[in-house]
Each structure stands twice: as C-alpha cells, then as structure tokens.
Length: 410
Image (cartoon, rainbow, N blue to C red):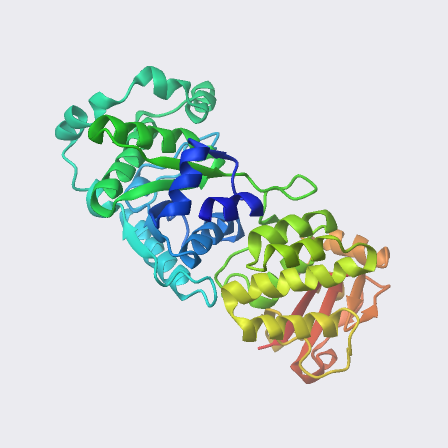
C-alpha cells in the first residue's frame, strides 16, 4: 500500500481524509503529481523528499506526474517565503525547466524514467484573464485564502497581488491534471498545504468529485539546520555543481542522530534492514553512515560513482594514504605557475581553495593545529608555497578532519 509505505518511512506530515486515501492507494493504481518550480538549473538535496516519494509510488505501479512550474514560476510561490522571489526571465525559466527534466529522468537509480513530465506553462500561459476570473476566480473565497498560513505570514510583511494569485494557479494545475490525466493526488512540502487544499476544493466545486492531498515534513538536521544547507551552500544533484565525492561526504558527515531517519527517507533499503542499521551505536554507527552515503549516492549518480567515492573516502579517512589517485574525485582548484612565481603563503592557499573565508580565518586554523598540507599538520601560517611543492603537479589541503581540497597547477 503506497500510503503505508510513505507513512512507515516518515514521508507524511498531513493528509486529507487518511482512511479514504489508505483505501484508495491500496485498491487501485492512481496518477499523482508533485510540482517543482524551476528556480535553478539543478535540483538539490532539499528536493529529495518529494523525488523519493515519487520513486516509491512508481515502484508500486502508480503513475507519477512531474510538473515543472514554467508557468507558476513566472509568478513565484509566496509559501514559506518572508519576501517576494526575484522575478526570473522567461528564457531562464525555460532553460531551468529543461535542465531539471533531463536531470531527473537520467538519475541513475531513482527509477522515474516512466514518470510523465509536463510543464504547466503549456496551459497556464494560454489562459484568458477575464475568462479565468469568471470561470475559476468566482470559485475562490478571499476570506478563505486570507486564512491560510502562508498568506497570513506574508500579510504581516506585505504581499503583492501577483503572488496572491499563485494559489489560484496551483489549484488550476490540479484541476487541469484531474481532467486530463485523472490525477487524484497531489503531494508537496508542508508549506503547500493551503495550495493543495485549494485545488481539492476547486475540483469538488467544478466536478463534484473527490481528490486528495499529502504534505511532507520539513526535514531539519539534529542541530536544527534545514536539510541540504551547509556552510558552502546547497548540496546539488548536478555532479558539475556538487561532485559525487562531495555528495557522498555530505551523507557520511551526517549527525549520528539523523542516520536512522535519513536511511528511511533517502534510501530504498527494506524497512527491516533499516531497523537493524538504526540499532547500531558507538563505533558501529560509522558502518550505518557508510551504507547511507553509498545508497544515497548510488541512487543519484550510479553504483560506479558511489564505489569511487567510497574508496576515496576510505583512503582519506583512515585507509592507505599512500595509494595513488586517492584524491582524484575531489574538485581541484587550478593555479597558474605565474601565481606561484614569488611563492604564496599557505594561509592564502586555504582561501583560494575555498577552505577558509579569509586569510585571518586560515591563520587561526593553522595556529590552532587544524590545517594540513598533504597530510602533514601545519604550524606556520606564513609558510611560502612554490611550484616545486606541487608533487606531480598537485597538493592537498585539509581543514580539520573532514574538509579536503585539491590544488593543481593548470
């Protein structure tokens, strides 16, 4: 039962008519949709909860519809935002939409190749404004819209009429997919509850039929950070923006307390196996983290890249550090020989590599014993590095235990 799988793995925060949904998803295969606004050319780890939910539905024989918000993206969803999104050009939105579709359909083991990919610009941009107001605007209560949590929060800071229309457009999406694809279920993040309910009510008023909704919880780490947000920024699914090795490291560096929940949400491992791994503690937790990191990386980047990332991680963190190629999967910062003509302080190299935000921060790191050059602890923040120090044309810097960077002479 699709509903039971989502429930047991921790995907469900709210749902409309739980008992009816459980019966529906247990007795028949349904079409369901989740929308993604193309605010960037790549999806990120924060998008994994809806993607994994779609994948579970697909594996159980249901029909997922991946809706790229090429139309709604022109307006910008106010939900969960304390200010209006920047207005994006039509050309950029189209480019991002195509990139997202390609990324999801080509993910190695996500299993969404049978999903239907649609762009709501195909129908929303063709709407006649007066006809839309007469036929659909009349079905919405402004009083009801003002009572939704997303709108109430924004009213305190100010909301434009453009953004206020967003809920109508998302509700129209649901009605349109209900009519064209017999879509009976919409899923989305917890901030989408008001928009989803608006679509269900529109279908009820227009068609006198029932549709359903599920929202996912906002995933935060054990220390209260939003899932996928790191000091470096978002963790992207695009290997050009976040390499498979860095992606693997993101998961293996998860807080011990997050590992059980992440195994349920971000892997396809059977629930019984997750229960056993969740019981690990102490030194055993490292094994559970390695399984989490490998499985999560395999799903997006494939088994071969996951194995490479695992080998590199082992070599860097307690394995054979003399093994050739041990840093090959890390992104490399390129330097020109001219940059090293008079030597560069190792503190400045930490900044150039992205390991430190400023020279003063790098100096503190090194004087406190947290900076390393090719595995050797540094003590002098003013140490001059010249081209001859790049053995084989590269060297490795490390900040603390986990953050490595590779520097190459280009």
